[in-house]
Every structure is written in C-alpha cells, then in structure tokens.
Image (cartoon, rainbow, N blue to C red; front, side):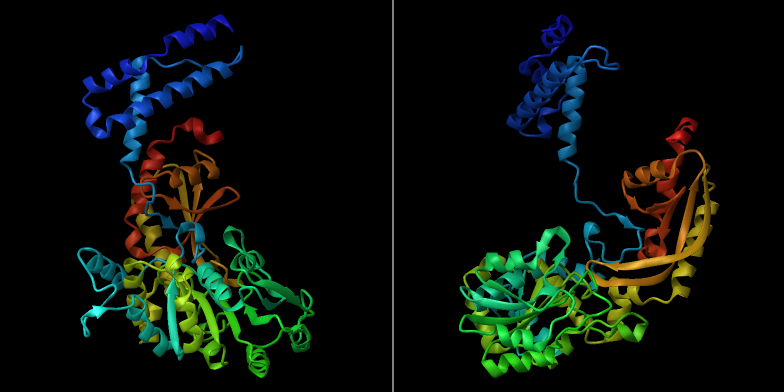
Length: 479
C-alpha cells in the first residue's frame, strides 16, 4: 500500500471520537443515537474507500479532519429532516407530466383530504344502517350516475385495475387482444406482461396495423375467457390501418357468451373535440357501446388522484369485488376523498373544465395563455435581473401521460436567454431551487411554457431567478 494512503487511513477518526464531537455540538438530539452512529460508520467507510481508490497524480484530493467529517455527518442527518417529495413549478408545457406527478388536484379535493384525514371518518361504516360498509360506496353512485355504468369499483391505479379484471375473468384461460394494441406505456408497463402475471394467457390476433372482426371470430375457442380492447394510449398507427370498433366486438362477445373488456387508459369524461382537440372516446361512450367491463386512470384526463377505476355490469363487478387480490389493491381514504371531490365537478362539465387544472390547461384558448405570459414577462423585467434577457414566442404544448398522442396545443413561451452562463447551467440552477422550476432548453435559451404555469405560481419565479443570477459569477459563462 502507498505510504500516503496508509497515512490518510490512520488520520481517519474513530467512531467514538466523531460521536463525542457531535455530542459537544449538541447534535445527538437530532436523530436516534443508533442512526447517528451508523451514519458515522458509513461516512468513515465511504472515505476509506475513496482513499483506497486514490491514484497518484489525482489533484484536489484531501481527506477531511474530524471536524470536517462531523460536518459531513451533520449535513447527511439534516437531510433526513428535509422532505424529498417537493412541490415544483411545471414550466415544461407537458400537462400530464408523469415524472412531475401528473394531474394537480383541485382545491376542493385538497380540502376534502384535509377534512377526512384530520380525524376519524366513515371509511367503512354505513352511517344510515349503523354497521360496517364498503369503502367503494362513497364513489360508486356518482361514478355510475355520470357514466351510465351499472356498478363501479376503485383500486390504486389503472395497472392494478387491468390486473384485477384479468385475474378475475381470465385466470387459466385465454384473453384475445389485437396485436396492434399490445402496448407499453411509461415505467415499462406492458399489457402482455400484466396479462401473464394475472394468470391469463394472451391470444394475439390480427396484424400490427390491421385487425378485423373475423380475426377475433377465428381465435375464439373452448379456452376463451375474455375479449379485450386496449386504448393505444401514447402512440398512433397511421396509414394503412384497420381496427374493430367496440360495438362490433361487444356484439361478438355477447354472441358467444364471452365478456368484453376495454382498457381506456386515460378515462376522458368530456368531449375534447368540442375544444379543438382530437376526440378521445369518453367513458360514457364506452358504457353506451355495451362493454361488460372497462378500466381507466383517475390521475390523467380525469384530473383527479392516482386511482384505477373499474366500471361495468353489476354481475361482473361483483365477481371482481370478491377477488382476494382486490384487498391488496384497494385505495385509501385520502384517495377516496380526492376522487369523490373530483367527480363532483363533473356534475357541471363547464365547472370541471374551469376548476380541474388538467382540463383547463388542455382547453384554455391561446389568448388566455398569452395574457398570463405577458404578465409574467412584465414582472421579470421589473425585477431588474442581470444576466438574463427575457422575451416571448409562440410554441406548442403536449398533453403527456399517454394521452392525446401527437396532439400539439398552441402555447406562449417565456424565453430566458442567459448572458453569463449556458442554457444548460441555467436550467440546472432553476431545477435546484428550493421551489424548483422545471423548464426546457432550446439551443441557447431556457423556455417556460405558460400553459402549465398558473398565475399564483408567479411569486416563486422572480425570486428564484434572483437566487440564480446573484450566485452566478462571470466565469460561469463558459459552462
């Protein structure tokens, strides 16, 4: 071993010495002693590995003193007191940004979460009968009234909903699905793999771009348990294509006594075509087509919390409800509270469009977005921020979240052209603020898309940029 390495290893303090130093600083009350001791041990071990990996000629390497190690340990433990899940400003223009939490909740949903969680609730208690009830009853009636379905059930996300339906209806048998609908969406969620885990056997029919009704007819056999139609979610097949409409598939299923399932994915509750967007099949459309069971997400186009909603015929839903797997996938009281509040908005579709942030962002006219952009631009110019030039330009937003693939939505961008640092560096600094601003880069500019930024978030942006510019020395211009 190199003599220098040997000397550095000798200089590393003992764990008891570090604990004594931390105790003198009054730090041991910030976390349980075993946790502090383990942090001391792991920090010292980390430095031991760094020393052993050091090579002759590496510059800037200097093992810390006991006091330096103690400060490193303090920072590590203080970090445990800081919540990692944080609010961010989504200035990307991706409305249903999966990485940024998808749908922001309406104020009414937040109020209901607080009200229900501050004390006890009637989660599984029937107040009228004075006996145990079902948690699903709180949202079942309003979902059925709004969609026309006979029954409804809610689990923790749409992947869980698909898994539960397949496991209930097709365990040990075949589920027939078009080859062009065997999709993968975010997080490597693949329909074939979910089917495998459910215990159902996949039976592919048709070609990638063309599937006809006769393809399903030929595939039906003694082991067929389910006919399945899947919304292709985050992609479109264009050109020489053909698919079977839901009504025809339902008629075929009923002819053979086989239930038909439709995985809708996003779960649209209003006609987006009325607002200049590509039309998505609504949940009401699917129920009207006579489907036996359908599944969709709560936190996409619905604009609510993460949830997987299952609707359909009462006899089918009763089987699904009795599946033991249902208990492992059920939702909690906070999700139920938020979902119920979200669904109430749809009793007045115009109110839903204004109050549910996802729907507002999707359907807001460009004039409204531009007015918000101009207001922010004035604020930024009044803030006298040195080192950044601000301007406006038109651009395009996206729905995101596997919804409305290929749909571009006109928007207005606030353009930040940094003069003392690179656009990459400015984007990074914005991302590391206490209230992070998540923007996008285009050449030498950083862009904030106003379609996904609300006016009540403006107060964070000038202050954040002041922090960024005041900490930027001239030398950063080359970074």
